Length: 257
Image (cartoon, rainbow, N blue to C red; front, side):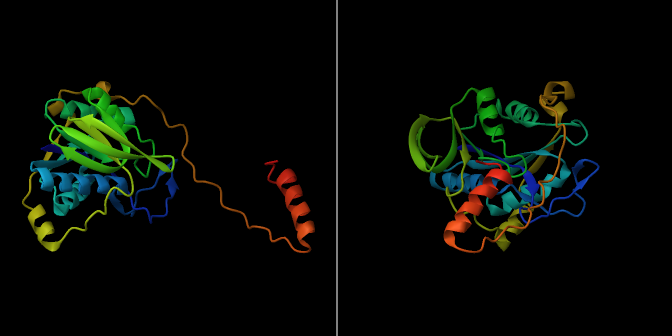
């Protein structure tokens, strides 16, 4: 099987985010593979091991993403591709990323494409479905189980606290939800092997794209941190008095009733 994984470099979930000049301050911040993309990488490796084939991990971004791509190779992926947009794209959004990925994948004869359900930094969940639309292939989001049988697939997806089972055909794009699997840690032998595995770097010119082709369709007006939480109130006295005071506070201060 010809399997591709869409991977994004994101802030470590333990990082304390700060702003500088109206933008997220990346100085000294730790970056990781987007956690949902880790599920995608693990699932791709398991599908390959069960059905044969090859796993290629793709990322769009700057040279810094090479570290995360090497981690994916150490986990067990066969190849990695970095589409370097550092010098070509000043502002990017989900359209930009999907357009670039779609152009790269259009002639790759992919049987299965797996991405994370969302990126933890943006949380839009748009890139996977957009890529599938560009490639004109079926897609299923928020999957928690994937079974491949020849040229068909049975997919279980998470739907508002329940699950839905879908049968579809390959080629197929799916996005991974928490619970799909337990991503492995790179082993020492895996890390050593990753150094010798191919990591190709492309630019927009290699895809016959220019900056106008991938110009963002959205504009970020403002980035701000959520307000600090205020101290809570402890109600005292008789239970009936507490209930009356709570209702009053919800009405006059919280203004939710």
